[in-house]
Amino acid sequence: MQLISDIDIYVSDFVVALRFWSDGLGLEVVEKESTQHTAYAHLEFSDGGPGLRLIAPVTPWAEGERPELGTRPTVRFDIATTTFDETLVRLMESGGQKLGEIESYEGMRTISLADPDGNNFDLIEVPEDAFELADGQPPGPDQ
Image 1 (cartoon, rainbow, N blue to C red):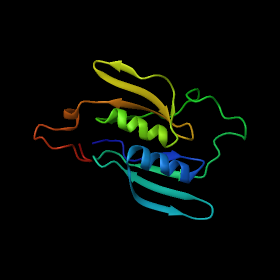
Image 2 (image 1 turned 90 degrees about the vertical axis):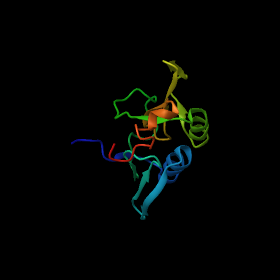
Image 3 (image 1 turned 120 degrees about the vertical axis):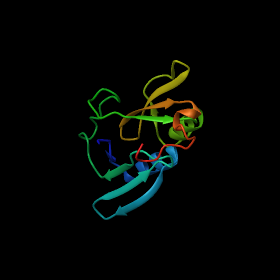
């Protein structure tokens, strides 16, 4: 069996990143550690799936040389949600940036976003029943 475990996101400003990922997506902070030189947080989705680990501080580019968002190779992932509009509003209020316009595919909406450090991901609207299994229960971390 293979699956994606946790996703590490390296950030330059731990406080800003923690606000974005916890407040913007409503992720639960299950572990947090901060010292004078480094910071770490493990966040989990309430509906299961891989968790996110924020690791700080990093300096991904030289001062004043930040590339345009979405122009550098990066690991990308999708965040599926049944509350697209509300989630998008929270992400933007928490420092997110749109990398394009909302697009529709087969009745679902999607938009590419960046966190405050420029880490890219797609927010995808899915129907409520997409998270349910045959028994009517939401999938757990092993599904």
